[in-house]
Image 1 (cartoon, rainbow, N blue to C red):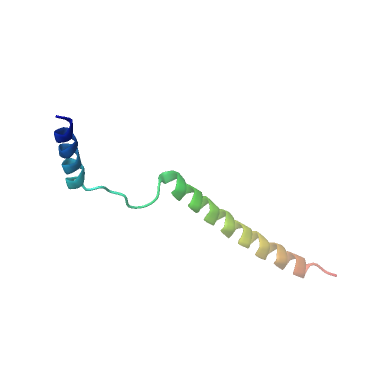
Image 2: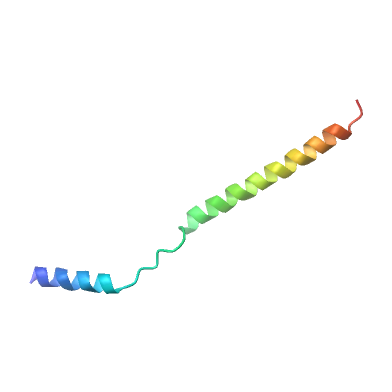
Length: 57
């Protein structure tokens, strides 16, 4: 009886489409956070460089 149940389980699993698109939510959030931090660093660097160049020597 066990082989029949196993075969039925395999058939059901093979016929059921799996939705494996995209990343997990936590991975997606981590990537977005890293991107936002990188953009913030670039903006801060540009502003700091501009202000430093505008200061009188």
